[in-house]
Length: 134
Image (cartoon, helix red, strand yellow):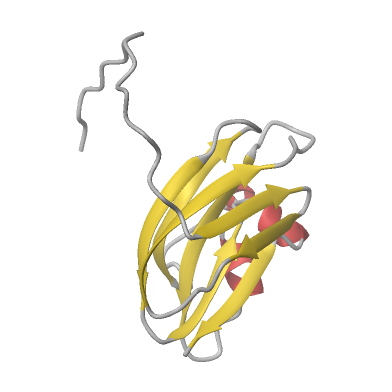
């Protein structure tokens, strides 16, 4: 599945979406501000620092079922160990690797249940944020 992408120097003039959830990624923490409630949301993902090594900060949203934990998802997301299917949780979306000053935005919908924000590779170092939506 491929689609061509053409990048030009011309600015689009578009403004960033209004985000009610703010997520800040730092070594090695995920700080979440705003109410994660049932319904649709837009989150702004900001990076506070650049971690050591070649992998930059990123974050992914997973819905946890049953007894699944954020730590299990983080262990699976350690691609050094291959990320073999099946995934241990349903992934809803995420923000790729980025650096300070380059915010990204994520639109997602939450239903009642358990969720976790997990950083690929850095999650095994404790970069997870588990929460429940009533």
